[in-house]
Structures are given as structure tokens and as C-alpha cells.
Length: 104
Image 1 (cartoon, rainbow, N blue to C red):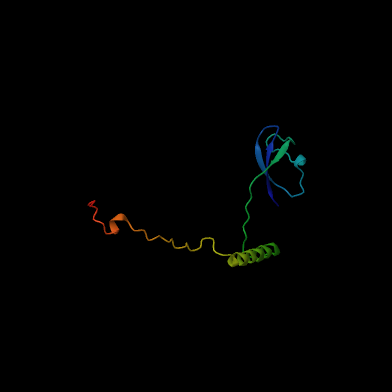
Image 2: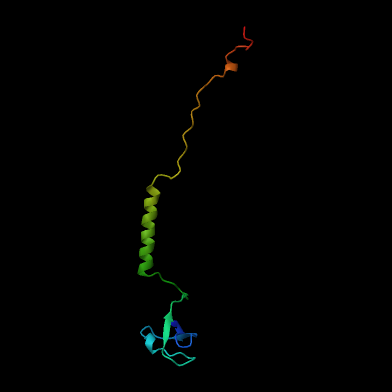
């Protein structure tokens, strides 16, 4: 049975109750003021798998979908390909032309 958290609208105190899933909020009695004005709060929960774990149908389906997607991704071209070699033109500078630059 799950543990539910409540806050009493009468006295403002928070408390927890172990109740069945079908328990009604209106029937919950505050342990502090004994009023039936409790509201159920949203809370986090944790689960722990003890012992040998066997995958269920939902997990097997999720793993199959993951395998299918990974196969599709393997067929795609790489995101970063090789960069093309940059072609630098063979430019001759004025100093390479053989002139002495004396201004004859």
C-alpha cells in the first residue's frame, strides 16, 4: 500500500498515511485536530527492485526501439566530415620577380 502525504486545512499540519489506492481523501482524518479537512499533496516516490530482475514487456519494447534507432543512426553519414584541403594560389610577390628595386 502506498504512503500518502496530507495537509490539514483546519490546523495546517502535514502528516502521512498508509492507505489503499482506493481510499478517499474526504475520509482521511487529521491526527492532530481530528478534522476531515485534509488535502492530498503531491510527493516524490522511490522504488527499489530487490532480487532477480526480469525485464517486462514495456522494457523489452523500449530496448527494441532503441536498437532500431541506433541502427538507423549508424547508416547516416558522419556529422563532421573531413575538411577539404584549401587551395592556395601560387602568388608571386614583387620581391620574387628578380628586380633589385633600385629604380633604374
